Picture 1 (cartoon, rainbow, N blue to C red):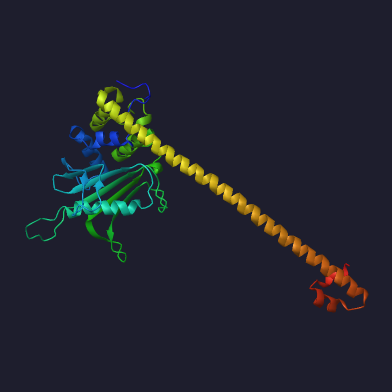
Picture 2: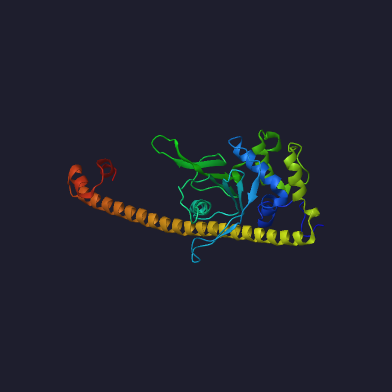
Length: 309
């Protein structure tokens, strides 16, 4: 089943519904495990995950609520939080650090003596934008607490991984690693009409099967269409804001340019008028018999200028 309004074969993973369908459901747990193992690239191997509640409150009812896209733990009890960030936010890094406090605080053992030993926490941000304050051309950034003197990792149980999707430009023919293939499919899934030949790993069998819109139930199709509408509206809002910003910048630049042009013109006009006045005075003094040196001192003109009168 596919709505007449939809022309894509596969879902757009940047929509809230599609991302949670592919990575946040027990039915598609295999997809999440495959993505995480490709992301960690052998640093650790995840064999299983347990999905946790994605909605969290602070220790008090008045505390701010946090809702995660995907929240799970592996078989070692390590917490993994994944956020698909569709649009840029002014304090995005602050937000990701704030979100990390929830899986940290939840590890406190209530009612018992606790020695503060923590399981590792991973916060993974898949960003549909480039970070303004990051100059590196690399699309992947792994961040840990570091000693700024030795440049060694000070605490290895808190890791932030940011993936700037607009900076990933590899074509199908350039996909070298399994992680490259995941980045390619995340960025291009909604534009694909056929499964690329480079993506033959078994995990992608499940991903393309789950992502095919024609296989959706009526309820899931409706939910996806609504989520897609929200995503497109969001993009339109962002695009409109950008265009207005550009237009306003051009308008302000034009006004500023005109003001500066008028000011410069007046400045040049005044300067020319003063110069012509000095020439007239110099001519009169020259006719009166004053020396060139004396005239230059009085008028500020050079001796060459006075001699040419």
